[in-house]
Image (cartoon, rainbow, N blue to C red; front, side):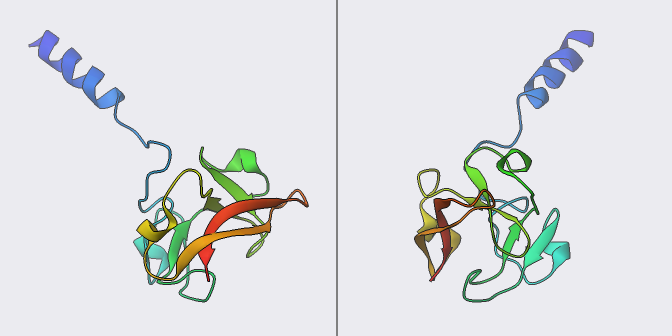
Length: 111
């Protein structure tokens, strides 16, 4: 029995968020904050269908394959090299946008 419990723990410990995952943490469409782990950026030109994400001040606040963009005071957005923007839904595309460091990143954003 102890071996079975130990095996289950090892298997579950290996489960986690993979880079580029589209989920309620970052990437799912949403209509309200309760649809997301942190915040829903409501349906607009930049966030078609709504967009679950987290706020940030720097790239280090964001998961891998995302960057802190200069939107809404800082929002983690997917890098185009990490995901196919079309997987986020209609209206999403790759564009160069300002990051919080004063540079530009090629991110998935609404058109």
